[in-house]
Amino acid sequence: MPAALFCPFSNDSFCTLQFSIGRTLYAPPPDDALTIEVVGKRWWWEVHYLDQDGNRIATTANELHVPVGETIRLLLKSDNVIHSFWVPNIQGKTDMMPGQVNVTSLVADEPGVYRGQCAEYCGAQHALMAFLFVAETPDEFADWLEHQKQPAVTLETAQAVQGREVFLIQDALAATPFEEPRPMARRGRI
Ligand SMILES: [Cu+2]
Image (cartoon, rainbow, N blue to C red; front, side):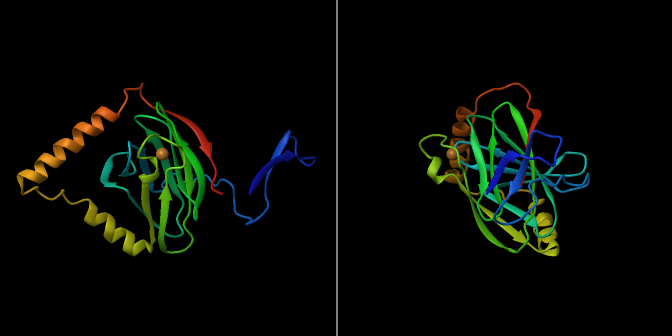
């Protein structure tokens, strides 16, 4: 549990201490770090993998994969109400604010599948706003990402097409227009 205290050994008025697990509170990711953009929706998670130029190269829903041992840069956004990104076994909570981009970073130390959950009440379906956080070896991650770059499957039934239309309409209705998001706060990993 981190805590802000008066720090007699620092010129700053406050310093931050980590009592229980001794992990770095915030490690700036290297410039070439894998960058993942996560958008909080009502009520699901849209995940975009970006290349070094910031272009979206793959998109997933409710599932976030990362290679273990690498510092990942996360760009956290919302196009509707306030959500909060939280993977309890990996990192503390970071809010996702409409109209701005919250930048944070994380490192998964061990392979595994972890549960992520929205940690900010965001409406009727908030409790169902969960996702899978999959930490895997760099080779497994590279294979997975390559597969995700493939075009989406073609919908083959009228029911499936109608379902997609309903989903897109609902998603558009849930979104709220905001000004262009701007870089804003930084939060550390816990
Ligand atoms: Cu929520």
